[in-house]
Image (cartoon, rainbow, N blue to C red; front, side):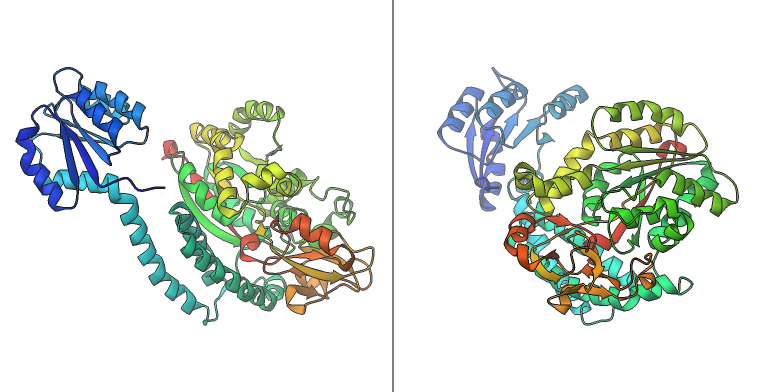
Length: 523
């Protein structure tokens, strides 16, 4: 955004009495022009731009509030400060209603005026300078942490802080600092992959040891306590919601409910058939396949998520020792969402759990690879966050949260996995029967051309996965890699470079928020 000039147009019919204020502002680098009548002020504004206009409310001819509309017609972005002798609340409310940028009551103090003018004309620059100094200092600390051996808690703290910095720097339009941050994140992804390769099998095989909450733990650790305390809970899963998207959404959710966020790790592969089934079942995929073989299929054309309501009901019954009423709805967009929302009040009025799955973010992420229009409006992480926030403001999700607040029903909101902006192709060699996923694959004689492009899993059960055929292994992409075949290298690069994908090993896919939203009306 272009900065406005350090010039002030002061409109007051007693301008001579304000000479000392004008000199004070000039001493601090501001050029001050004056007009004693509204029409004269408009003529000056037509001739040249000013940074800010100070307008006296009580003047002969046009009132200051009447002049405000004419000023904004000439320059819609012009900051306007109303100056008045009146302390009448009605005048103040009228000024606020017109979206005047500030409001001062005479007698004026020079530093009071300087503070307002500086905030309006130089506030963005001052905030950017402060942000840059803060980031440079913090950047050194974050770089220093790379040399340390980070545990799972430290990784969560680091990933969240980087997500917050990404949002702050993007909003401040600091491309140079963003580039430094992204270079750091690229290096950290490599460290994260090494950490997961070293620790993940222990997390799966020794659950009694110190480890993070994983997908199968979310309902027991977050939803069950809410049910026991309140009798009811709304369980919301936003498919493919990244941590940075949640950080961008949180200020929009906070006016509705109190927000308390914790974090967990998605299981691998970090993809819906595995991570979301584990979320609803409270079981690892190998355990789901063993307990419910009729519900688990390895055929890619069949949905592995067709039994989420039953898995949730059985998990809650297992945890509580008795049946728990469960209601389940999936919001995939379209007119049927309105019907679901009409049923929601009745559902929330009953004891037990109402589970809602929202697929918009996942559809946006996948559709971006197929649609030139979506690709253009969601070019990078910042654009994806902006679209997610724009969706939320008019979404069924927001409507559901508002209904839960009205009915004093606590909400547990989470994601099943995230996604990563993939830029680097990784060539893999596989037989024809290998699965087609771009961030994870199962197959015989499966290998990556570059060993550091993926984690090779020889023993699927050690990763909590069901056995497949004899000799079947898994490849999990790391960093920002996506799998390509030697025979389709150019086709895959052209189609998927820059896509948001999931299923592999990265902080963006695996470190996820789980938020407890508490209705304020229930306190």
